[in-house]
Amino acid sequence: MGFRFFLFLFLATLPAFLAQEFEDAIIKVDGATTVAETDANFICATLDWWPHDKCNYNHCPWGYSSVINMDLSHPLFAKAIEAFKHLRIRIGGSLQDQVLYDIGPLRSPCHPFRKMNDGLFGFSKGCLRMSRWDELNRLFSQTGVILTFGLNALYGRQQIRKGAWAGVWDSSNTQNFIKYTISKGYQIDSWEFGNELSGSGVGASVNAEQYGKDLINLKAIINKLYNNSNVKPLLVAPGGFYEQNWYAKLLQVSGSSTVNVVTHHIYNLGAGVDPNLVSKILNPHYLSRVEETFKSLDKTLQTWGPWASAWVGESGGAYNSGGHLVSNTFVNSFWYLDQLGMASKYHTKVYCRQTLIGGNYGLLNTTTLVPNPDYYSALLWHRLMGKGVLAVDSTASPFLRSYAHCSKGKAGITLLLINLSNQTTFQINVENSMNLNLFVKKTTMYRGSAFMHGLKKSVSWIGSKADEQLFREEYHLTPKDGYLRSQTMVLNGMPLELTDDGNIPSLNPVRLNLNAPIFINPLSIAFIAFPNFDAPACA
Image 1 (tube, one colour):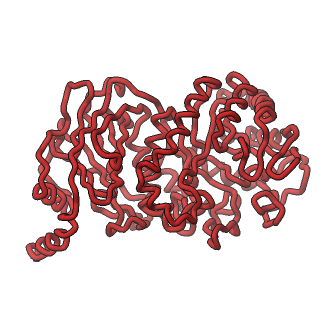
Image 2: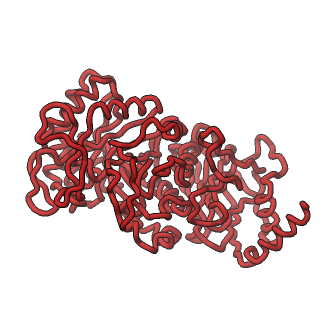
Image 3: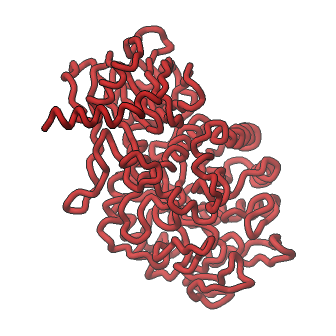
């Protein structure tokens, strides 16, 4: 029976194997110095305000996933957060600047969001009741959440023409809300001011000069209210799409050390309804276009705000709730992990994924809360990739994306390899640019050896035991049954599914001898940890 199975497997895979191409590649990592540094908790996910009747393209993907209405008692929700030990969560989104906090005197009644044709984004103002805020904070405290809360920056302003708002921000509701938060002892890592009001804005905009003056006011409020606290929350702004002149003006007006973190949003894949989403995700030249945004923002901060850090405050890839059966499937991890790697190189400290739950781009399924593939991509990054970002030089074609960081919590480095090619298998030779060691022995690539290597991996993932001091750890990610739009991710040949008792599964690597060749199959992703890599920058 065993022989027949192997014979069947060989004959079944032979045509596809013969159609593959093979390419040798050298990846050189510089372990002498870091080129950038992220926050220790780089991974972040968002919770949004959208009600269940938020729809795009005749599809309503939000369900009951809102800050206001989601079931906080669902056991899987807490487990999914706790797997990170300390997950950054940003509460915010399009309706953020219409939220009233139900405490103290208000300019209008505090009612739930409802559809309204002439309302911003088609909805009325909404309400955060303090009883709900209490419930949220109990969960965040129990699960170790590091919280960023997005404040309403339109309160008290008037709309002067379509898309443009003017007037001084009324801080009264925010002050009462922050006072309540402090009185309850709730820990807030950072307060963010406004959502997508920068530049030409999305739905609404505020000019940079007024925005800067309002930030000075908010900073003074935070300093005053937290005067007796050991740690003051950071002030984050503007949470919009990057426009160089607007951002520079904001930093000039608000002045030194007012804004601690400058946030921008990334939706570089276009509309969620675009039928070309998958082809964009698998096109290395398309993915690289957004690199100019990171470069420009980095330069703007060096020039006008060297005291501030850059965060990606919200990024879902495709806007308007993401792409149905794209953003919540395996193929999206090519885009997501590439974004994490790219952003890190340009001094981005935190990257907030839209969303933790809700829309098509949730890390968790909106109804069942079962993790989607990108959840596991985020968790592996969080556990493996440390703060130090290392320079990488590669001889591979553009279809092999490569990033390297100091390993998290242990010696050595971790390499992220993303193979966007649908037909090329890469054999990787990893070198240390310090020229002290060659870490993977160069071998001649020929079809027979590559095929047998792949066959052994697909059948058992068992090889000879590596020397305890000379091994590497590999995490190979593929879609179930080879289907790119699968909602099940496979790690080292094993589907990632909840355990029988409903827990997040273990994410275990394969240990291989350090000198064994590295193979990266077509349309696959791999994290590879080298504990013995000589990297003084990571000491």
